[in-house]
Amino acid sequence: MARRRGRQKGHLRLQSSSWIGSWWEEVRLADGSLDWHRVSRAICRATERDDSGRARTITKKEAQRRFDEAILQKIEVRSLNPQSLATVKEFVERKYRPLLAFKRRKTQEHLRNMLDNHILPVLGKYQLRDVTSDHVQNLILSKIAEGKSPQTVWHIRATISALFKKAKGIKWFSGELPTEGIEMPALTHRERAALTKEQAILLLQRLPLRTRGMVLALALTGLRIGELLGLKWKRVNLTDKPIVCGPDLVEPWTAAIRETWVKVYGKHLSANTARGQYQDVKNVKNGRRDVPLLSLVVDALRKIHAESVFTGPDDPVFASSTGKPIDAHNELARHLKPAVAALRSEGESIPPISWHDLRHTASTLADQAGLSEAEKQRILGHSEKMTRHYTKAHLQHARVLMDHMQEGLEAAAMPRLRRVK
Image (spheres, rainbow, N blue to C red):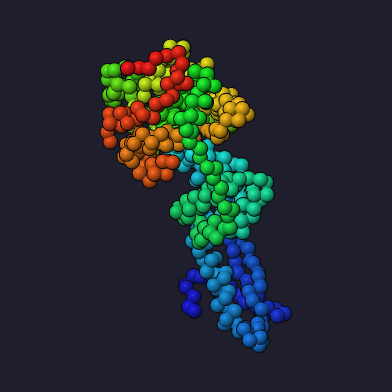
């Protein structure tokens, strides 16, 4: 095998019963400077047995070929990528973390959590070029031993993969990604629940006004909880005439979905985030959409508006005592879950639910009401593929069909209010 000009040939010597290879390798010292160190390692045995069990002598030429393939070619690749001497932590701080600013807030928080709590404490000290699949596999096994869920360890693997793909793309790393060939646990998913109308009636009767309004809005519009909390009064038309909101014309009895409210956690909180912030809706084709408001939802929102002190155009529809969107987790824990638990303790057949389960409820009710795939896609704000996943155009046509979704819920939804005509 011809050796490329400038590539190390190394030095081979026969010592005892093994061929020993020696070569020079660039290393980073404790002060950050680079230096060359001579390294020696056994390449192969001097005598090996073939498949038939007979002893076979390994010549120096064959040992040199193995030496070149196993060591020297990799040394050449490393010499072309001197940045791979940086540690994982150095790469993250200098190159990867600044790029998080271009991602959505929720994605930023997720990646920071993966890096700071799981990846850097274990892999941060290693040079990029030295991280192998064994390191990643051991990290995965340790997280499973700590009791982390399969979803969490899959997220850890995905973050490591994205990190090294970026390093490879800017020539800070070369070779196969250390996440290749990793054994991973099987993913488990909780089966999403969808309430029947009978279950919804029982639940609505147990809820206070604000929570009841949230349940109605989610179950009869299919909004995501972040979209519901990001809804401002200026984009909710509770009248029979169109209203103008900036460049948009909001039709009667309609909500214009333009923003979502994203929670911010922990040490990454800043003074101006107020534990969350508004951002554009989920970046899919139908994310920005107008959603028909059925009469029960209109009734509930009018009642909430009448009792709220935050009714300005830019105030959230579901506001906390500070004027910011409410904490969905607290609302779930204080009102929705206790109501479900009380019904279950009384022997009622109702599944434990989350805010997202109400989105599945909306999809199921829409399917029962006869909405087409295109209409459900428009209302839910999904791609065609995801619309099919959720199902266990024209706005007005969809509104007529959607009216069947609320049939039977009137008395339980707003017992003291008549329906809007």
